[in-house]
Image (cartoon, rainbow, N blue to C red):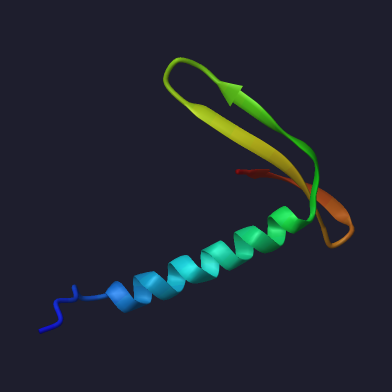
Length: 59
């Protein structure tokens, strides 16, 4: 018996696509990530070179 919730396969494909896109973006990272944090949260930002320009991406 295989228990699977509705939409699980679609969620898996979407997650795999997002992971592939993230890896591709991080391959073009420029420099070290910037870490912005306080006592409640932490975020890492990285500069990514894409299509001849640089974009800031949350890591």
